[in-house]
Each structure stands twice: as structure tokens, then as C-alpha cells.
Amino acid sequence: MKVERQPLSRLTTLGVGGECEVWTARNLEELLEATSAPYRILGGGSNLVVSDAGLEQRVIRLGGPYAAEDLERDPVLSSETLHITGWVGGGRPLPGLVRTAQKRGLSGLEGMVGIPAQVGGAVWMNAGTRYGEMFDSLYELEVVANGVARIYAPEELNYGYRSSGIPRNDIVTRVRLKLAPSTPAEVETRMVDSDTARKGQPKARTAGCAFKNPTVSGKKVSAGMLIDQAGLKGLRVGNAMIALEHGNFVVNLGGAKSEDIKELLRQVEARLEVALEWEYELWE
Ligand SMILES: Cc1cc2nc3c(=O)[nH]c(=O)nc-3n(C[C@H](O)[C@H](O)[C@H](O)COP(=O)(O)OP(=O)(O)OC[C@H]3O[C@@H](n4cnc5c(N)ncnc54)[C@H](O)[C@@H]3O)c2cc1C
Image (cartoon, rainbow, N blue to C red):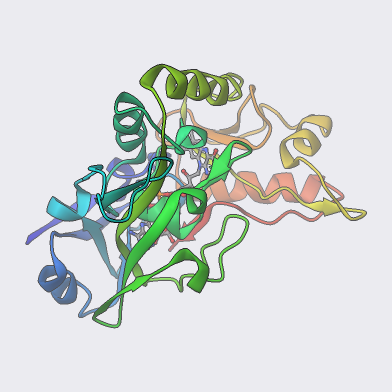
């Protein structure tokens, strides 16, 4: 098994985080060894603010077969209108998976375009957009908890908006997808629609939306709109800034520290009348 010390700033989209011991597990045996001491499980690092001082726990990544994909049609479970795939590893980067599905004319993952997660992280958070979420396309999933691998049907989990119901540190090792047979051209068209909705998002290093959309007088309100209306776009602490393009995105202008990001989020919270909840996960 590969074990190396490296800064998590290299493995997170925001580009922040100190040195950690990173274990890459490629099968159940390695995963059991890796989880024998306190750990955290890392996906694409696209929702994380990691401490500049690094972490005491091991950081586990999924590699080898746990990062591979098999989109072949299961001849027994599939039908004319339903394509049940083979296993796709929790460590498989989502953008690559979305693209292979498009090339094979398989529909269902188009709403996930532009989410720089891994399959396991996207399942754990039930990531998605208004065009669909990860659980829409799940046929079954394998989760390793307390050293035991178990297969679940999605209905057995208490999943909901941006949540899978899977306890923290249980590991999504692989999934099978239910997709709809289509054509590459049709899937591409839907991907373009979904991608167009992202055009206003910043290109700089970020971890996506910083705050969850709050509920005000019984209605969900856009956190980005509230931040924008408060005139906070461009607010800066060190090299962390509220993006000029989108009020709910924090960008790293280069060399930002986790302390800068936390302070920036605290300043935003202090200047708004509505209480906000962080979407970013803090690893300290
Ligand atoms: C540019 C950009 C755009 C984004 N757009 C969206 C969007 O449209 N919709 C959306 O929902 N999110 C979006 N995000 C946020 C982010 O991509 C999602 O929250 C995603 O689910 C995080 O997955 P990850 O693999 O990067 O997980 P990480 O950030 O690595 O980890 C997040 C959490 O998942 C856990 N985790 C990771 N892998 C596993 C695993 N295999 N098993 C169990 N737990 C695991 C981690 O322990 C951690 O608790 C965006 C982020 C960026 C940077």
C-alpha cells in the first residue's frame, strides 16, 4: 500500500491544507489496515478546508480497482429502458465518469457536470444540481464500516438533500449505477444545458459554495444572493476572497491560509442578518 506524507493543499480544490500521512488503499485488505488507526476519508477534496497545520489522523484515499469503472450492461438486471452497470469505484473522479457515460450514450449523470468530486464523496454528500443528484442514478452501493463491507440498495439509506445518511467515516468503496440508454449526442445536449448554468461561476481555485442556502420565512433563499445584496463580493482576508462572479464562492487567489478562509466566512456571517450554515467541511 502506498503511504506518503504530503500537503493536502495538493489534494484539495481550494489548495489549502498542511502535511498529512496519506494512505492509498486499493482493496478491502489494504482498507482494513489503513483504517486500523484514526482516519479521515478523502475524495476529490472539493468540499474541504483543511488546517494549515495538517492533521494527526491518517488520510485515506481509494486507488486501484477502487478508482476504476465498469459501465458494461448487466445482462440479467438490465432491460430495454434501464442499463445497470458493473461496479464503479468510490475513488473514480466524477468528471471522467460523466464523460465516459456520455460517450457510451448513457443518460442519468448529466446534472453532475462540473462537480470535481470523486464518486464516493459525491455519494456520501448526495451531490447534485437542479438537474439531478447522485442518488437518482444509484442502483446499489458498497459501504465499508467497522471492517465489514456491506451492499445497500439506496432505499435502505436515509438519504435526502445533500446527505446520504451514511455515517461519517463509513467508506463508500464502489457503486453500481442505473442509467438510461440514449445516444452520445442527446446526452451531450443535456450536459451542455447543465454546464451552461455554471457559466457565472469563478474559474479560480475554490471549494464550491461556502454556505448552505438558508430558509427565510419558510422559503429557501440563495446564500449567494444575500451575500451579493450585502455588497460583500470582493471581501478579502489575506489571499482568500469572496468571488466577484458569485457571492457564495470563496476563491484562493494564491497561497491563502485556512485561517484566512475561516476568518472571511466569519466576517460574512457577522455582516448578514440571516444566520448561515457552512457548506464547507472543516478538517482540523
Ligand atoms: C467548482 C466546484 C463546483 C461544485 N459544484 C457543486 C454542485 O453543483 N453540487 C454539489 O452538490 N456540490 C458541488 N461542489 C462541492 C463538492 O464537489 C461536493 O460537495 C462533493 O460531493 C464533494 O466530493 P469529494 O469527492 O470532493 O469529497 P471531499 O471534499 O474529499 O470530502 C467531502 C466529504 O465526503 C467524505 N468522503 C469522500 N469520499 C468518501 C468515500 N469514498 N466514502 C465516504 N465518505 C467520503 C469526506 O470524508 C468528507 O466528509 C462543487 C465544488 C467545486 C470546487
